[in-house]
Image (tube, rainbow, N blue to C red; front, side, top):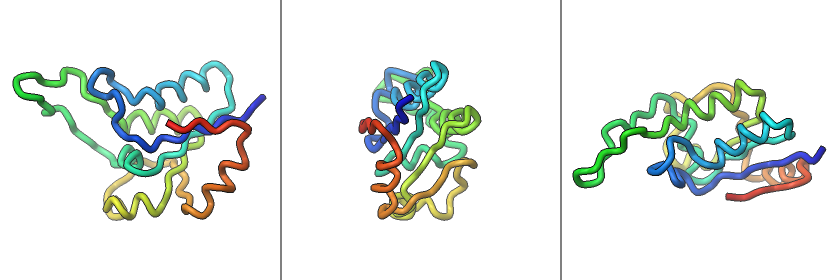
Length: 127
């Protein structure tokens, strides 16, 4: 079975239309179907790790988002499903998240170690 690594860098993609990041959802579904899948968060997507995000007041003019995403909870569900979740340490630091409570269970990796992580997977899907 091929080992798949999903890389998410573009954060909050489609989260206005959906309750979830589509790639987090896809990763969860692939695991449910028996795939050997892992997730790497880098760039702005490392913000998904910040605990207790509350976008419930999000509005665009007179339109409110009725079902805001709970991306930190989505990441927790991936970890609980035994899906390896990696995040680039430098990106966490650059976004000021070093002193913010982050979800448990993700595996920090340095930017230098990303190439090795890619090499450990047969397929790399970058979103």
